[in-house]
Length: 174
Image 1 (tube, helix red, strand yellow):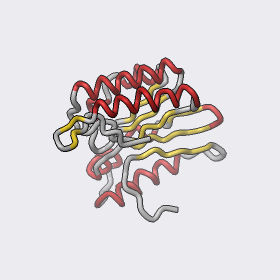
Image 2 (cartoon, rainbow, N blue to C red):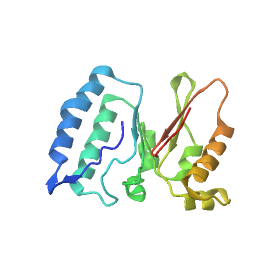
Image 3 (cartoon, one colour):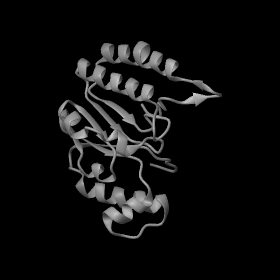
Image 4 (cartoon, helix red, strand yellow):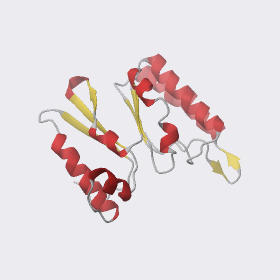
């Protein structure tokens, strides 16, 4: 799942009541019924970088409920999320089965799951971050993604199920 945009306003009306209904009356019961191996939340959890307190509380509630259900959660920050704000407590959360990737370098430390599944979590990033992290010149998103994914490819474990979670626009993939 992705693009929840918690806290979104539409024509001056908050969607939080509807979003809360979806999470509490649709999504969480479905999770409880199906009990998936992992929930992936691929960015834009919030609608803006400084999310309303009510939106943060709703996401916090969702995180607590997934933990209560014993279902691991992996989330990445999207272009609408305040990545630094979402990073609060991530080392502690990871110990509880909640992985939130907010930094570009997070993609190089895959989440290791049962059945030899390696989950690479690639949050939204800007090309300048690639220049800083990898120390090489890239022009635009296409070159930046190519550079990052080339480095991820070097890490792929033969025989493993390698899964990439990203928040980006993709066109012409195979």
